[in-house]
Amino acid sequence: MKVLIISSMPTHPPIAGNRACILAYSELLISLGYDVSFLWVSSPNPSQEEVQGMNSFWGAKLIHYKRTRFQLFKEKLYRNLRFKRTGFYKVDDLFPNDLITFLKTHFQENQVDCVVVNYIFFSRAFDAFPEKVRKVLYTHDVFTDRYQKTGNPWFSTTPDEEAKALNRADVIWAIQENEASYYHYLSRSEVLTTYSFFQITETRLTEKKVLLFFSGSNQHNVEAIIFFIETIFPKLQQRFPDVKLLVGGTICDKISERAGNGIELLGAVEDPVSFYSLGDICINPTFSGTGLKIKTFEAMAHGKIVICHPHNIEGVYNGNAAPVFLAEDANGYLAALQHLFEDREVLLQRRKAALEYITQLNDIVKDRIQSSIEKPNRMR
Image 1 (cartoon, rainbow, N blue to C red):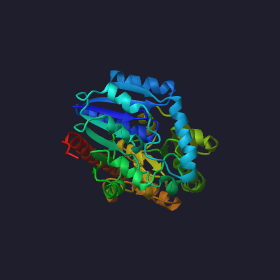
Image 2: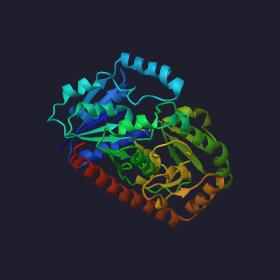
Image 3: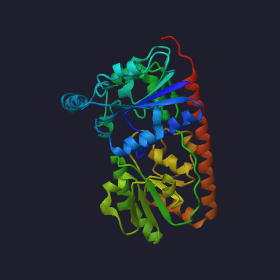
Image 4: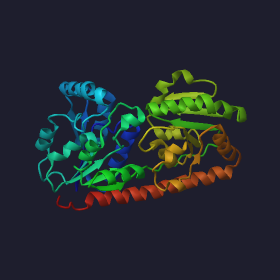
């Protein structure tokens, strides 16, 4: 079965949560035996690192479409004339004008069995394929009133515009249960909560008083780690004077002045395993934003114990049973660390529970993704 993935986000380097999600399900589809190709809709001048990474991973299965400067001008026009005045985009405002023609030219009717489109603003790509082709929309996030709710100006639509995108698909992959519930209300298409797949890579136990935070430079993550450093970490140091906080990822560029006094900024991380091998405990203090909190589950997939804000388990698989410590303030972190630093058995039990949880999650993700791709289309 031939599957085409369409995305404006490259899978490599996987330096952000959305990239990691796309790479994870791409690798899953390949491992299940599907013939997977990737159409990368890039900027006119993608970075050399991205180009090399994409070519290295995808090889002949990569189709590279570069947006034109005219397309970027059109996006800027919509941003200034529509979004800045109304707070909303039309769902197709970011869709390249000639991408439909490009798709029809490159993919004849018998060449593709299933198309997976990432994000609602690329859903118009489905129009290039015949009805018999299975059309899957991986939403990543709810965009209805997103700017109004979060202040993030990237993309925001009205409910009607989001519904227009959702109804183009045969099946919608929602990353969280609460988002799936909303899509059920908004769309007539089939909706499945597919979460995200996480490759299990168990790392060694260090038994060090080290806290790990691995993150991209999303503004919500920046606000969270600054809050943690300013209001929580000093109190942890009072109780545990030798505790260290190691921060990895592109977020380091945003908090460069915070290094020192027990805080080490390691910068961009090419190999997550090397970072997760530096300690046993990961934190995720993020208290705002939407979408799945990828790093919470990626950490567990590496056998890490996670202490996180309750916001990070909203809408996740079996949230009440997720083996994480929940903490909103210094007292919550102190209580968790008291157990973990002073009782090795608790550390081992939580580590085992994290790996078992991710194993169960992966089984569900694999089953839902495979069954949704292979399910025959109903006549519309």
